[in-house]
Image 1 (cartoon, one colour):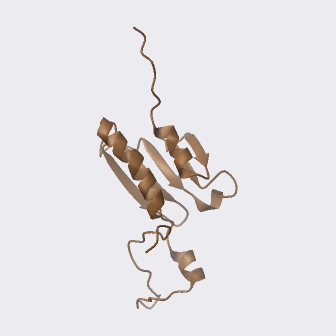
Image 2 (cartoon, one colour):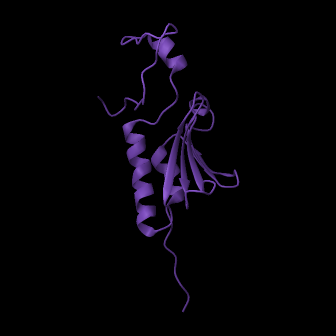
Image 3 (cartoon, helix red, strand yellow):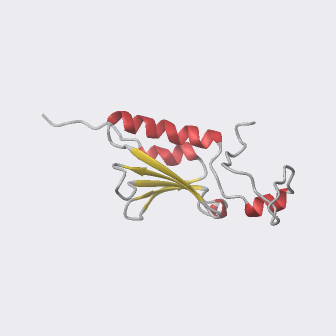
Length: 130
């Protein structure tokens, strides 16, 4: 399994219910949900781990859909997500494949490079006045 191969939680089935090990690329691309690959998840979980260590974030959820994949970050389990990291392939040529959206729906950053997009979530050091 390579680093660019997506992590898919289940196999697609034929309409008659039989599993198909070898599927045509066009058919599986149309039916398969959009997902994060290993490198993307590693970058996201690195930022998530540092925020958990700081005590700011406590939970996350991954939603894989037909049009986009979303990694949601929560302060507490029962709340709405603080941030959503979205991967939307149809926006790849326009605004960029990745975006970070805050709780109110405002897009904080978009781009083609996930590492640059995630930089908006890292707190910048600031000076304290004495």
